[in-house]
Length: 169
Image 1: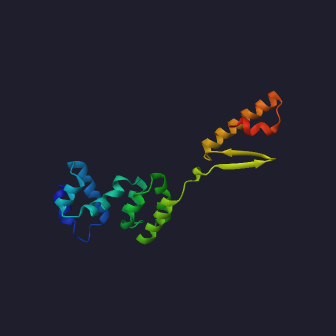
Image 2: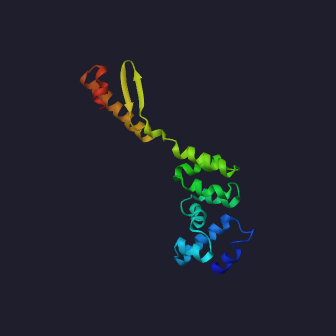
Image 3: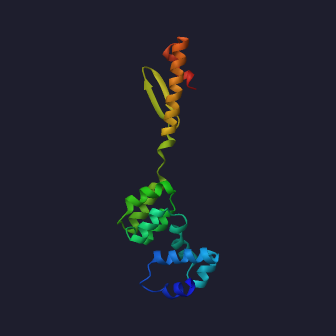
């Protein structure tokens, strides 16, 4: 039933690209057609089919809903869907109500931005240098646990504070 409905509505003005993408995605799920076979049957280019399907294959549910609501323009959907899922949430918040060009540039900035966790956190206090290799909540907790254990060892063995960095390596 999808084939006649989608074929009839593909070139109408009333069917949005998001709706066409939804129908194509459902059609491919039901029939098991490849993107190329669906594109050939509906007389669409494979590139266009790929762009229409991107938000439904790689996009998180919030992105799909924002596209259906119209709060994000359809042309920006594939660019947001190309980002990792944890970055898509931020991109959706930044791109609501924006034009396609703004969405593209925002997605490029988010894609090229380095995650915070890559850079080690360096601490210097009273002549003692300490480094947290993973400044994530789990990494910081592991670091604090290691410091607590090292401080217990310092107190137990009556060692000077200057050996603390050596105990943490």
